[in-house]
Amino acid sequence: MTTLVLTPGAVTLDDLAQIHWGGASVRLDPGCRPDIERAHARIAQAVAGVSPVYGVNTGFGKLASVKVAAKDTAALQRNLILSHCCGVGPAIPRGHARLMMALKLLSLGRGASGVRLKIVDLIEDMLDKGVTPVIPAQGSVGASGDLAPLAHMAAVMMGHGEAEFGGAAMPGAAALAAAGLAPVELGPKEGLALINGTQFSTALALVGLFGAWRAAHSSLVTSALSTDAIMGSTAPLQAEIHTLRGQPGQIDVGTTMRALLMGSEIRDSHIVDDARVQDPYCIRCQPQVTGASIDVLRMAGRTLQIEANAATDNPLVLVGADLIVSGGNFHAEPVGFAADMIALAVSEIGAIAQRRVALIVDPVLSFNLPPFLTPNPGLNSGYMIAEVTTAALMSENKHLANPCVTDSTPTSANQEDHVSMAAHGARRIGPMIENLNRILGVELLCGAQGIDFRAPLKTSPVLQNVVSRVRQDVETMQDDRYLAPDLDRAAKMIASGDIIAVADTGMPGVTL
Image (cartoon, rainbow, N blue to C red):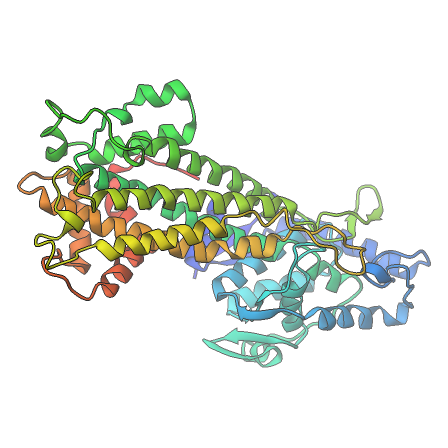
């Protein structure tokens, strides 16, 4: 397993994608350890003093005015974690939880949280040895931090809760013991540092971003297939059109689609004397719509990269100023906005893809392809209901794309009276991407079927490779057959990145 050395404040989206897609183990750059120790020393000084410091020698939230005796500070942190383990619902996937742990490491590594090095070491060792806390998906409102889900992580570190190890779920203490690790007794502020942050919301938003980016990239391939299958015009892809507008995503999509379609015999066959003047928007405006969605994903990516590197617990130890200050970095509003942006982009990529599917099965619009792409229509229905399925998925994604960040509600006896709802805003992206991958999978099948009908004319060499890859898993449809497995296989080709990999030689670098 690859081990990434992460420098807090300098970690990139590529680094985080390696953790998500590749399951890389992580360790903090040793250069951040002195700052962590200095912040802890300042907390130790506060414990020895008489002044109240939030979360160090006081209660939490609405109980912040209650002073806690020095002898009870360890019990304070223990009680905090156990009482906050209120997550419900199914567990998030193991990879999501590991990314969340890596983000917590980055936050602690900024040297403003006041924890001991042994806290950092334990998280690193859990990641390295494969001890993954079981984290319920529901329970966070995205302020004051992702309290409930992060408490389930901290509980395992204490030997409580539940964790996965060796492919099996077991009590947290048993998982640590099986990995040769020992639980930790939390010291002053350490429980608060572990649960007061945005790492759950940010991890889920990043997973959504990475999945959305893969789907967006795949949609460039499926849209190029659809364009050639219906003998669409490539004139709207001319570079000058897009440079005159100047939107970078639009320029990138136009460039990529031109490359994908280069050398198509199908396209060359109808450049001259085509009676059609303009294609419908779902063909003609692909760079404008998908390009805008790509730009939105990039904007969300910039926000999430900053958040991944941020210190987001409370209070923060400002070592240079010799202060321990209560603030609000735990509020996940930036993550909530980013999650809503990703959801909007996912919805729009699916919406225009669905219209291409509707176009390609419609004999009035598909330029002489048979109805529903079956060679014997009437007796056979072909891809008729596959298109209906894409319409259902598109509509579902439209509803899910409604903003979550605007839906605040007061909590904790009105102390925490505005919250971000970033957690479920990020969590809902996962099902949306599954829907999008299925829409694009159907488009992939329809595009390949349409290309088959254009024989003996061939599509471009790059797209021909894509069709060949499809045919490894899904045969050309002659007569009607049980279609559900075909749709599943096509969606997996999209979700896995197979289609991007096959088309890669014809796709200029479009980076997040």
